Image 1 (cartoon, each protein chain N blue to C red):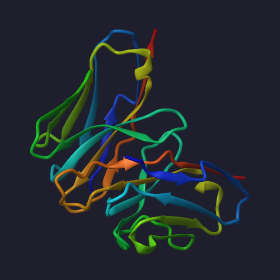
Image 2 (cartoon, rainbow over the protein chains, first blue to last red):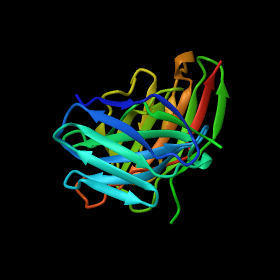
Image 3 (tube, chains in turn red, brown):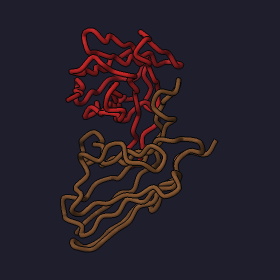
Amino acid sequence: KQEVTQIPAALSVPEGENLVLNCSFTDSAIYNLQWFRQDPGKGLTSLLLIQSSQREQTSGRLNASLDKSSGRSTLYIAASQPGDSATYLCAVRTNYGQNFVFGPGTRLSVLP
Amino acid sequence: EAGVAQSPRYKIIEKRQSVAFWCNPISGHATLYWYQQILGQGPKLLIQFQNNGVVDDSQLPKDRFSAERLKGVDSTLKIQPAKLEDSAVYLCASSLQFGEKNTEAFFGQGTRLTVV
């Protein structure tokens, strides 16, 4: 059974810092991995999708990497801004289950 | 492109009452998911549809929860009777069929259910 964890659970940084959010999964037989952002009281916004054959994806100040063999993905946010404050969730889609298994999320606060 | 639509946005009911949530996925998306998100936790899959067939409902509490996706488009999730522990956000998501090149999942705004 696929299990997904995220470290840290919460993170507070001053504006302008570069930061890394971590996601670990127990079963490397994944189809793809997706990073989401969730603002309080809102749904999930897709940030990046990495296929199992890819090593990284970039969108603006965001870069996500994937290392299937070690069961890890990282989300790198460059030059953080107060508007980046949200909860970041990673979700793994397995080859067999077809659905997305989510981690608990990292709650990010970027202080002005 | 229109996103995933859900209604209502908020619902407050008393325990033992029934409630229904509606979802309209992105046009052309064969796969539809219902997730339950309890405060402070990641979403947990309740049920997954491929067109109008159920792919996975192993975590759906079938004694009180039911879902259908008639005609393979809209979907309804029902809870009857509701319990206090059902208080959560219910998220609907859709994606292209598993095996397609891009199976990025898109989520609706969710329905926040409070059972009192």
